[in-house]
Image 1: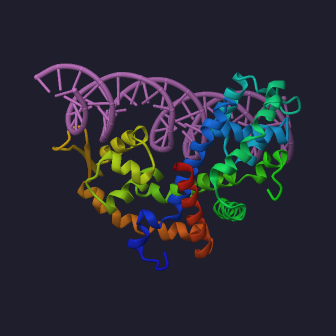
Image 2: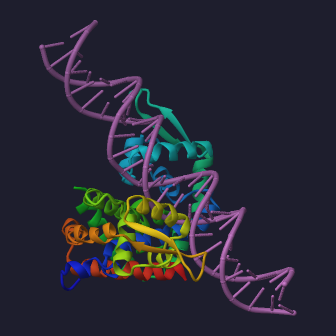
Image 3: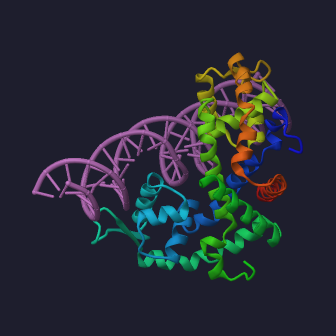
Length: 147
Length: 147
DNA sequence: GTTAAGTATATTGTGCGCAAGACAATTAAG
DNA sequence: CTTAATTGTCTTGCGCACAATATACTTAAC
């Protein structure tokens, strides 16, 4: 990439995006066995993280936090409901809006999830400073791509 | 993350993995309109990058390059075949193996694809040095997670 | 009150991403 | 040659991710 040659840039090994894509796939693969103990997929785990942080929110607010739309979230939320982790009530003020909130089982699951982040940090095997830089770059990229 | 507190680490805003995941989703979203002109999805585009680089390979070799398995690749390759971009022949030496190779249309598509990487680089809006560091970190992470 | 515009959620259809398992071809062992 | 183990591909089933569309509700304008 030191030269912006079109031929060279088409090479897989020179593509940042491919590295990002492959690392993300590998990361989700690495979470799988850990989250299997909680009977959660990675997007379901992210959703639970939001609820543990702020309960009783709408699909819209949840989607803003996760950068996902309702087409993705609605079936995911139905599965979480089926597992007995959340309820999907209707808002009294606005009958269109769902109010998503944790059940006791959903709240209780947080205890079991507490060990996951540190466990993942160990698997990653990168120095904390490098991870923090990576996080900052990803957030900058996300911001640039979404405006 | 300066403290390895379990409560703090469960917070979405402190998770490198979520940043990685969101950035990758946004990146694939950003490719979509660009690749629509080529009638390719992002994983299909990656597959074509491999073929433009080394033609006449098996599903196994392709999977090693892309870090994807045959359950993902077989239907994707059928769609590329249906579009007339590749052929899926059988090997003479080993009847189990497919030999995937570009058609003339597949080869020709490379010209149209040449502008994509630079276009994406502009959208990303990050300095080259930062992207190179990000790429290196992603590759290190992938390597650590796959051994 | 009717109409029009905007908003929140749900539905449908396509294409990954992967686990699990099936199957046929190849190779190794006896 | 026969059996057993391995290998390469395919199939099935599930769960995202998202575009496009539908539906129902709310608000504002008249």
